[in-house]
Length: 334
Image (cartoon, rainbow, N blue to C red; front, side, top):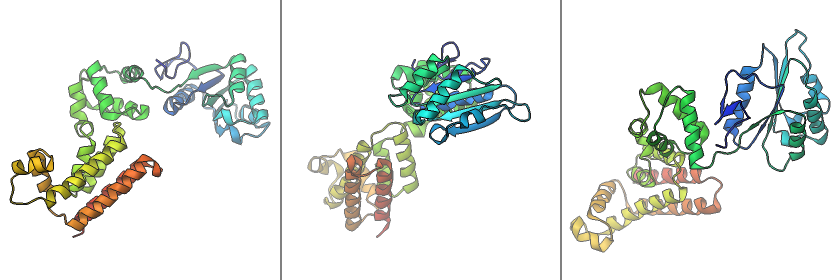
């Protein structure tokens, strides 16, 4: 898979525990979690108790690298982490490339580079100089994420079947940091092979989170539950557009059922409102506590969220949270 992997030392982002770090290692790629893990492995594997210097390349001044890589006055080595190497000035980039050709004894240097066109010449120079390389490309494909999860389970000393891995992706989403944490939690809290049934039981509230659940809790006035379901839904990859659509349907349902004749049964109203009888009964229960003015306020809140989610706002999550708060307040304000 495409993960964090130098030849012979890493597989799927899992460092080999016995491999000592090279004098100079370049960590390349956009996947921050894997890059952080690679840096942590180098720090953990550095011999002795070195002086640790964690710096950003853009903040390094010409000549400072030689100071950072010098042996400690107390006889210990040095560990230097240079982050965002693509932002290094021309002079500092040349110093890094020159250093890689003849690294100092008892010193370990980790250079983190985002990849891409910026700073490409520095990468080529470091590779030519013999620096080890760890690639941390984004894990985008479904099969790659499954490979990542398998490796995480091996890392935790556990086994999961394919159904369990797929269920975990459904429950947690695609963020590698969250997936790694989920594997660790499942490994600690469950026994036996981790199957779909195990994952579903462990994450049952999270896996069931949908836009309609968010909307139902909001129109029922359950603010904490609605916000919790919103965060879970977003974390599991539910589109903000679908969530705002569900909120709109929920609020429209309040208006339509609320204005319908109360004496008619749900079956009698189903054809007129274009809603199944069970849904009409559900909305009638949800209408308790609502006034026409409150429903109008909720309509306006959803319309504003819809515009923000579709491009006018900077954060879809914030827009949805604000809409939910307004909807719940509109129900309570009567």
